[in-house]
Length: 149
Figure 1 (cartoon, rainbow, N blue to C red):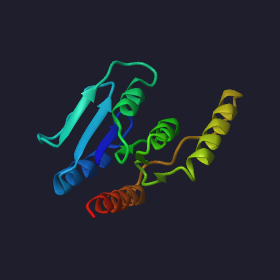
Figure 2 (cartoon, one colour):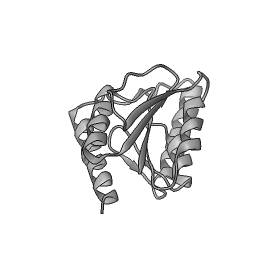
Figure 3 (cartoon, one colour):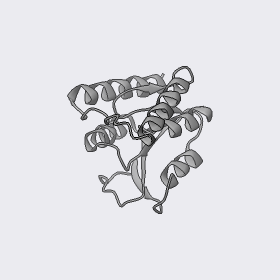
Figure 4 (spheres, rainbow, N blue to C red):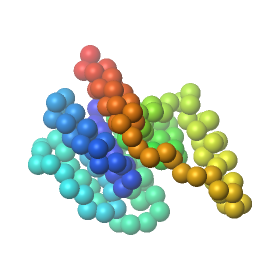
């Protein structure tokens, strides 16, 4: 399993958890973004900068991800694409996307987009907090442990 990170909007604390997990489990982690990123010196961790543009980083992740890989993203359409490729998708808040729940998540995203485009104020996500951090770390540990069996 390799881990691909949709890094443009990924919280720094999630990246730190991933960096520690990479070293602990000897798992490759690649951050993909359209801006330069700092990563710790490691043969397991690297960053790829793609050109700016709509979905350029997402398209690169889809191109690189293989069945069984893990993609870290809050982007629901990207999660749906990698799930279709038999990769796993995990949000930075610890929600594991699956074939069973991704359709409902896409529908809700589209519904909220429609509301926003009609002028409705839908608000944004709640601020990232310690419970989100713990859910992410716990889910990541479960996924990495299942790969080592």
